[in-house]
Length: 98
Image 1 (cartoon, rainbow, N blue to C red):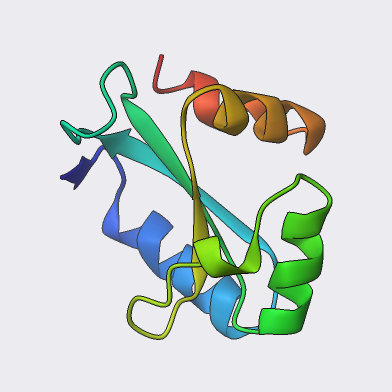
Image 2: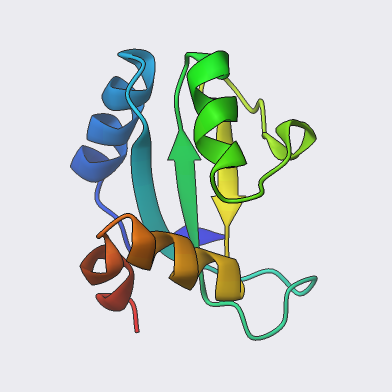
């Protein structure tokens, strides 16, 4: 279940993804399969080659891309989410959910 974001934030992320930008969207997320994880960051881009190359920088595999709807993205959570957001200079986006 996702919550903690506005419709405007979601629409801006979708627009950025559609415009082939690497776009980040963090929100609260609860999933019993991942105990202890309270957030997820979706890193999306409609240009799959660009998204794959971005993911390689962080050891993310192409097969981990979620092709849900028209917004291909990686789901980051846990330790990897923190480390990648820190390296991307986006830790503030993640910390607002802590």
